[in-house]
Image (tube, rainbow, N blue to C red; front, side, top):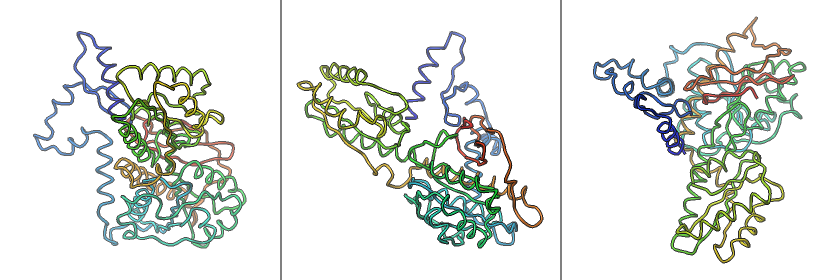
Length: 430
């Protein structure tokens, strides 16, 4: 996918060039394709002159941040060098499992310990929270978690609204001063519900932070979520294998259904990477005329030397034009020209070890989130306790949204105040 996007940017750069345009290099800044003058890339002599700190800065802010995070997590400081904060921070996963969740938990635990906090792990989401499945987690307990798939802490979709009294009791019992929730849209709903009962339970008047982790990539205010890249890898690899299965046979079209709920991210980006002929998603309504036009396109295509076609459909793209319906339509209209096969990828998109991108992404944004929580704990500590104003109302803002910088979106409704951390260069206030 990255190669496709950068290739498009390179062609656009060529089309826009003139005789006086200097040569450029197509690169990435954050997750956006940019053009950098060629001479700026090759004229520096920082490495030759052994000015290594300057060389690190020239590599870009992302590389600099990666190096800083690695140094923070790789080696544990002696107990005598750790700051003493006396704050307790709880970490839990909510929603469906997403590859990279464990890397995020590992990063949060180790950064929290480095900041002097006592870290607590909550098993099975908010269901485990109100049942008291809370235990302190140490530096060594998360060793080797980076490459593990799924959720080692356990994760449930249970929302806290019906059990806020029991959750508040557990927070009092363990003296929880901050909350880090890792999950998808359900995690967003959970923090909203906790915020709405701040007037009743002062235990929830604490800094709360969410890390977006879902294969669907459907969390408001974020460009990317932990787990989406691994799911895309599974989709593209499966599409390639399915297309290869028809090699040497007669002309064939494959209809493949992806997950993602009502978000078409997996279908569109997967289709871009796999070279699909069409992608049907909820965000772009389609009717029978669109389906017929695609069938006619594939029919004409199959009359040439091309022997395979690929169509992706998001699972909730249309309640009537189901995968079975599209399969039957293509089969009937393509009779005599090509045959058709369908495949529902299902939960294989959630499984497997996280991709290198998701491991690094989860590690970096989790470290950034813990540093933000540490800052807010200090700012809200008064008279021996941590407390945020329950009636605080803040307009929707997003800061740090410069390409290449980590960014956060402060999302608000009439009763909402929470932070969403994302590594994207652009974020919306939701």
